[in-house]
Length: 311
Image (cartoon, rainbow, N blue to C red; front, top):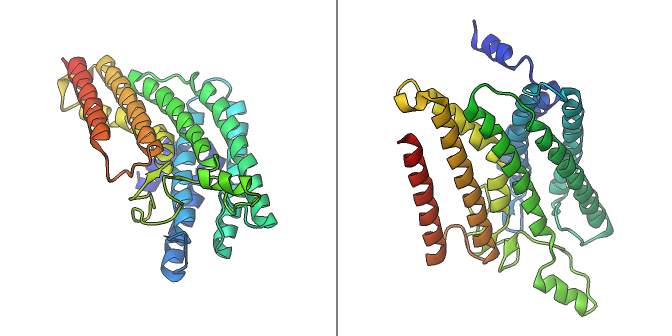
């Protein structure tokens, strides 16, 4: 059997529209890389096509995972299929608006500078709310999945819940900053309403591609970390299963399941940690003693939990 035929046989039962969306976004991500090389414009200190690239990669992972999850449902699969179709349509419309704004050299989020910019941001905000509600219902439906492997059983459930939490953390970025509120109080109208940077204005030095601030707090980090629990925890279950033939203790599916639960607790702790760090206007690359101490305690707790389970 060829590699292509093997992949096709494994994915035959997956939700097709979301699988196509994932593949399409993968191609779009490549096109965004080409655009980054050709179009050297920047917006708030970041390459203009970096944001469409990040959204394409994140969307591809999101839809590939949901395409798989829908195929696991023994009940409510038709409802889940329609909801996932809705997600594809909403994300596609939002992405078109995001690319439209990037091509114009305009910010797509928080932009209140002109009536057109404000309308686009308002429409995108309503789309995101629709996406959140659909994801909430799908997360509830995921609780009905039946998997023989207990590690996968808990990885899917915990990953879906933590991912919804991560998506929800995006609302922290919509709150007006103190400077924006001050403009309103003096009778002015701020060009931007909301921000992802805490402690400074959006823009400035950031990590390559990711753009996360290296000089202030950045709320995009907990949003990103939490949202991708949907991929990380199932991958943890897959990794433990792959290691089982080499480590006798991991051949017990109860042990693997408990390790996944420890990993889920640790991931929830990580999401809380980076949220706390961002809200304190602290850069991800310049943690203070309190952050380092909390991180050390989290690592120790996960390590001790894993050791206790394997013992």
